Length: 411
Image 1 (cartoon, helix red, strand yellow):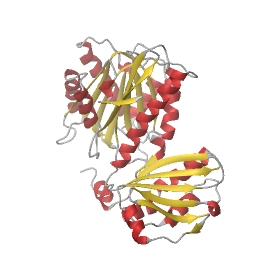
Image 2 (cartoon, helix red, strand yellow):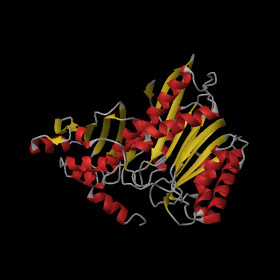
Image 3 (cartoon, helix red, strand yellow):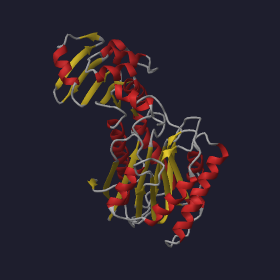
Image 4 (cartoon, one colour):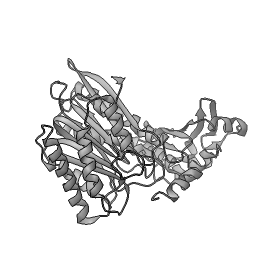
């Protein structure tokens, strides 16, 4: 596997576009991804009981056996808590896309179109702007790498930069591509996809295999990040596979399937970490690794608890080596571990500071710890000495700017 240029249009047969439809004042706010041929689709969605209309629309489609030809995304309005009107607006958007694609030579039905939205909750969709926006998206479709970047920019809300990546790998004698884009800077917590993310691939892959791979990969990537402890009503991760690479069908239990799964997980992991790096108001990125837990399940619970701790996130903002907040977060996590066996250290490009050995505090230089924790990328390692379980989670600090951003989000 190797990293290549581009995002969702790096995969053969995919086009994209991004336009300003007026949902937001000055920024691009609508995006499209379209495949030249029907796609196998897989999806994972929010576990929040309050689900936006697009989540209900998309999950019904990806749960079926039908194909998908396009995704239409808008930023600026979540289409959540909008009742039957929200679902009707999804249908109208899909129908509008079908009509536009017909004149481009595509013969698709509304049930072949996925819809995603992000933005303010509880406000009806401004269909007077959405309709012309869909027309503009169809008109501007392109397979150029720049078109994928336009789409990645158009799905942003409070993000400060677009997130995209693409890789290529060999499947048999064919070169296969996986491209992706994601948005998210707030309302991010490990409880499903925690963002809007879109993955394209030109691989030919069996639907059940793709869905299983996506679910497993999300567990170790998007489900291992946290910015603020809030899980959105709109969280969605979609993968579209159009088979344009010409490889033999990828099925579970083969070497080809494992190679593809590793590449997919790399793409999702890269996007997940980029979301945390761009967390609302964030100044520091933290990687929390737990080793020696009883099993992987307990390791994941411990790591996620630390990256989700508001108290430790605030300490990280101040470059304060307050290791007690790490151990405390592990203690209330619900994981099975023995605090008396834990070793703990902080590290960055400026060195390593050990603060706890076998549950006992270790004398350390506060000055050195301040230097270590003042770097943009910081690592926290907790070794439990109880088994082989290992897991890594990613988070960011909690700053004044996070409160400022969310204090006037709707304005």
